[in-house]
Image (cartoon, rainbow, N blue to C red; front, side, top):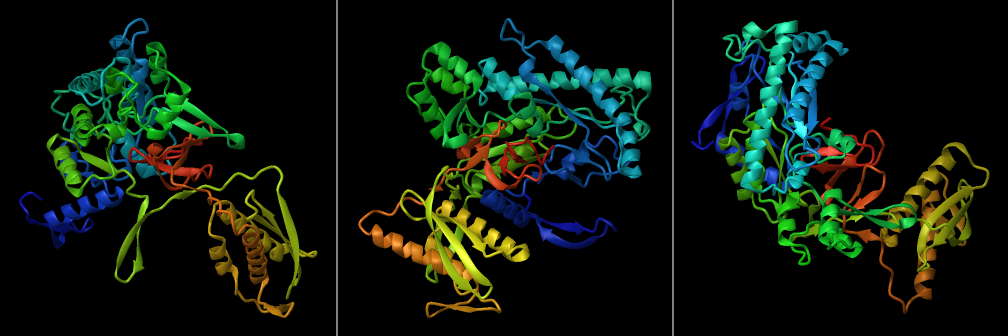
Length: 550
């Protein structure tokens, strides 16, 4: 890319070139798209294959979705993580190296057992997995460890500790793999590996270390994820009956209480800001240690990944978080720096890059608008409304419209005589969606426009007007109700519609956590149906713990 040359596009089946592309143009396109919406991440296949332990068996072509586990065709991930938050001595702020050594060795032994005890879906997967016996032991809770040691994440001391800890983990992992190699035998492809010269000893496993995002694991363990910094210190949750509770990072709460600046009002302020960097009443030394992801310059993110990569056989899952005003040049710098520091790949995400949309408002130009996340207003226990009877081609339709405190349409229910089956199910569906739209503050006129005029084979007449369908009838009733409400409240200001420009996220207790800082909505959880968020380069459900990264 730096030489601005063309490269061959190789057909993976024939291994022959089928065309050429300019490396610099491809790279710049990747930078542009990563800046635009966080995709794609980048991997350096040449570097991955440079450290391929079994090149005679095959070469790497890709990775798993989060990029931390490079595998040959049909190989499977076998990952585990040590919670560094639990690797400190209870009576002092020091790392318990003996405990860490014991934990690493037990973890290696456990993961090696998994290979033998696992039930494989395909024979090819079983064959290659057992032949190379790759495992990927990593760490999580690193940010928690730094906080307990009073070390800022964005500091030289943190980088040095990262190298020291991961070098120790790799050393002890290899010691245990050698013990298992002598006892159980080396991995079958040992003679086809880079270890056949014996310099590393008789290893049981072709690879030993990996840094995974630990989305689900960190939720279960109650610690920070992977090697990422904290994502927020305080959250405001909405629970039953729309009550708000403030949840605070326990370590920050302890420090705030001990130092005498804790207060519920301060915690709410932190939840709104997402960071303590500019809160005057918090001491400077506390601000330096309790940094969150968006407080940290992108360069520190890359340096931290590079520090862990030095002692990681496979790769490192890490996201560089940019502020919204970051430029394409910032993304380009991170990509180039990650390569120079020996990373095998890297992911970036620019804040709010998936919360904006460009729409053609006029032919003379474009207007950029920020898309708000629309949250339905909670339904009170008691509502007041009216029921209107209207004749349709399918029979008498009864439309009940309940109003909100501003006497505007809030929810809609429908009943058609004794109708059942498909007709009633369609009416119920329309009613649910219409109610959801009204409670979410969608412009009622827009709703009416969508339903009005829809035709069916059985139109009818109602007081001199033609009713084209049940949908058309519903629209007319809603429209009349809206006109009536406006006439009654001409002198009053129209109420706010319920839009909230904040992003909502579910926490691991099932509450709703307010603050964009928790991640960006990217879809729906396939397990529980709650919102799916992108956090640190991985799609995570904070409600049930589902993680696309495992």
